[in-house]
Image (cartoon, rainbow, N blue to C red; front, side, top):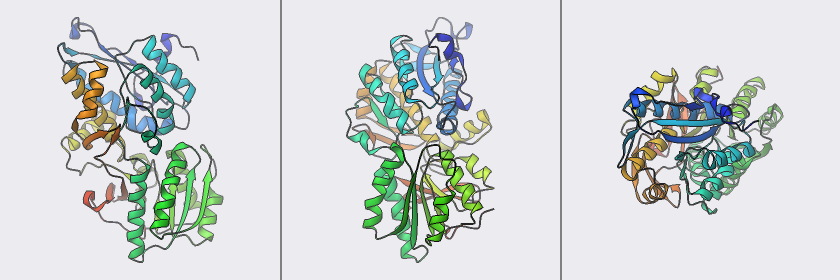
Length: 402
């Protein structure tokens, strides 16, 4: 792919304009704040990118520019200009373009790509040039081990996610509602880390995993795995999945006539399109983190604005945190300007109130948000666990597939 500037004039997943320039008479002589990023418009990461990040980027840009632009300390309001590219779900492509955005386009700020592996690929670039990067879709215990002081992760990480999964399953076992687990995981960084976190938690909780299988990213057939779990008598499907394989597993579970008491998956379950595709997906569980019932300031207003602009709902996991990352960036720029060193200092020392709840970073990790489990119930993805964050109670066994 040519790296000429016109390549940035494409449209990325989720309807995000690749290069949006809002200038002219409405802006006077205000110099735009240039913000660069890549998103996957094609390839296996495109589904998540087009749901979780793309729509929130454009919603935020529209809202801020409607107010006259981004408030920059000491400068007043400046319009936001996005420069973005379809990274095609290719790590190397993303790395090249982040280098270009910083060194050639000289963007003021950067936003992250979608997904754990992509964030890992580009975070060293952000760190190299001193650009703070707020990642709302990066989940990895290794983030704590790496020297990436300019990278900040908003989501709960593998250990707290698996603590929530196992906490719920242990509670259900104590109630006599489940007994045997079939565990499947996608064989990439994300899936392997979740699996490595899940294993000791499951063992410590005394939960019986009757079979464990991995599968490659982009798998086209999971029916042998599902049939094996069914034959082993598993009444829990624990899938450490990405959206495409999550859809595949759900489709094929119906095809092989397996309806376990608990169908618990990872990324994609909380997406409204998943609910709609599977006729409500009643009783299906997955990673949670948010729904419009939460009491965080601005949560319902955010939900309504997202629906109004995009004619679709935000997902119930990371969408709100993608928007929260932009709220955080907006506040930082308003208080310290586009001085990236000062933005980092503020990120390291401030608790932010967002539509996703309070967010406080310690060594780049959000320590305010726990791992959560949700379940589709009558059209809403109710938070089940931890109980202190719950908006609903578990329905187990899940109803029959629609």
